Amino acid sequence: MSLSVELNENYISNYIDYEDWNMLIQYLHPKFEITLNDITGKHNPLMVSQSVIKVLSTLLKELDHKVSLNVNVDLLGALKELFRSLRNCVAFNSDVQALVLQDPYLINSTRDVLNKLLDINYGSDCIGMALQFLSNVVARNIDGATEVWQNLSLVIFKLYKGDKCTYNAAALLYNILYLKKDLIPLCEDIYEHIVKLCSNRDMTNYDVFLLELLIQDEHFFSFYVSFKPEYRLTVLSLIVESECLSKDKPFELNSEIPAIITSQFKRKSDCILKTVTNYVDQIEPEEVVLLLQILVKLSANEFYSKKLQSDRSLLINCAFLLRSIHSLGKESQNNFTVISKLSEINYSDSDISKDPIFGFKSNIIRLLGNLCWKHKQNQDEVRDLDCIPLLLDCCNIDARNPCILLLIILVTVTLFLNSFRHNPMDNICHTKFV
Image (cartoon, rainbow, N blue to C red):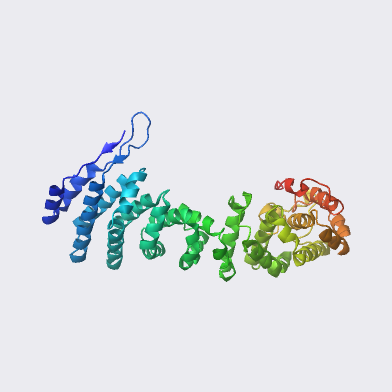
């Protein structure tokens, strides 16, 4: 059931003339109250005509002018109630969204009010309600997203980077970018701010949603190298933990993101050897671990495997890295030493799954297998590098590397056969050692 809204312009004019803001609030509040349908439990949309939108638009212009002259608590209360009215009449109603966008003043007047309130650093409740109104204008409406972005992008950035109304600003920004991903390259000024919020765990759900959008954008990822080490970990962790890599095409086919990840892994992979005994600086090794996990996923994806397989230096890097960590593990008791018996796990090692290098050898082997899958040149290269004896020497049960025996068997088979219809590496379980 829809509820029709009617407004008396004379009443509103009198309230404005006498600056009776409390009466204006009492008049507007029940008019735009959203109710629930007793049968369906859904919200009853408000039926709002173009004339009602025009009245609200005129009222906003009047209040905007009043804000320029003298700001007080009662005036801000009336302004907040007006934005609440606009928010409610736009909610769940694409027809009213269209009426708002057709009005020549509403969006611009909202921008002007926000700028004035920001200048005087006052009225955060009013600002929050205005942002909620704009979010409803944008919701599932690409025209609304375009209009709001063109008129308010700078205001939204300023609010998002400030200390007030950041949640509502993040929600509005996410709703815009979700519909208009081509605008992401224009958000350079807030790239690091978003990552910083997520790194400090001082984030809202919308901060995470924003970062999930950004990590799939090539322009954003071009800034990855310049981020602080802890920020890079945040970006990589989100890629690994989110559903991004589970998609058929986590990145655009022509995206340079896989190339950036590959380049960073090759450049930094040696630092994993620093973890032989003590983790003096865990950030770099953890970054390599995450880069490797992403490469394993991408190399098993048919859309990216050929490009990764064509990178001969990546294959050689993996082969020599495997040889290095295996040799280190045999030299003395260290973090690469094989743990073949439960009795060998010391109390201090009882939670080895939390070590940065847990499963690292297994993932290197898996990446080698994926790079050699149905690729004769890489298969020959791996054999020429004497990797088969190395793989066979790694055939030991190892609590640090679950499923390593099965992995080695499948990789060894991959090095000799080209007739499988499906990559056997795709089905390797990742069950952690308990």
